[in-house]
Length: 410
Image 1 (cartoon, rainbow, N blue to C red):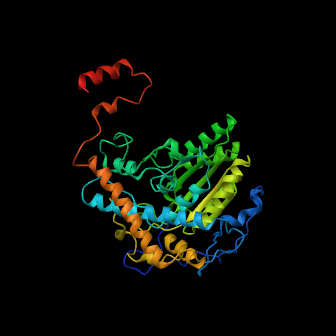
Image 2 (spheres, rainbow, N blue to C red):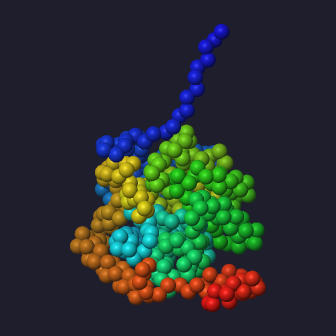
Image 3 (cartoon, rainbow, N blue to C red):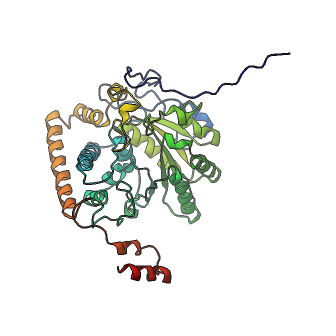
């Protein structure tokens, strides 16, 4: 009788644990400009290789090279740099505010600024993003008020959402920013549904779905790909692979797919990977995917390869699950520094001007912070009224809510 071999369960493990030497040897990085740029109307099966490579534009010398080099003007790039610097400064001030007890919770974008700031430039008014909690750059680059963002973070009397959301879960229809959901992955199916509705009504607006690498393990992610591919919804399906969920490395959610972009191949969706710390590459790929959606060519799945430098949130201690110096070893560098160096190479920027801009932006953010704090913070000043619980829910308040409001005396 043949002896049966015992089964074993495979549990993916990160290459390095806290205290070890950071190792990113598994991240295969092609030369900048080496990945071809296909026509927008290309058949998905002919570009399968793009789901396993990384599209890059900026080389190590700060030059923009290759077919994906975008024709952005000096002024547009300088504005993009300012958007990223503003988001980074905003993050730093709000992190300090949380440590001071002025807000209950905050989530940084450190190291990921290029993704949302560059993507926003590829959109048109009326397009709708269905973001996660790490795409505030869509608002910053879209001209949304920092004071309003801070008032929500502080949960004060000027909170635009009147205390109905967590501090960093913004919403602005006018700025194409759908209300963030605290339940992971729900926004993916919502984005596809919104895009389908836009197409059914013969509108011109497209949607953009956003998700983190860890949340791709949720069933909503896969359901969204089924509907997007079947109905050729005008949507860009974005995956931000920042290497870590709150305490779990990206290999757990990725499984045996090789890359997150490869997940789209089984659905017949064109799938690309891009250097998420390269502002020009992110913009070029976003523009390509957006154009594809507008031309009724269906969805595109984009994986942004980046690194979460900061903690997952102010409730997280990343030193418990990854080496403290790991972010310094990340081979794709810092998005702000890389765009700064590119602008210096172009002759339109300098180290001195950059330091001056940092000071100017800090002054602007501090001024917004002072104004927001004048309306109150978590433990000081005015709060949203209890009556706000009853307002803005129904077009006409039903009798049972009217009675409850009367009983509450508000």
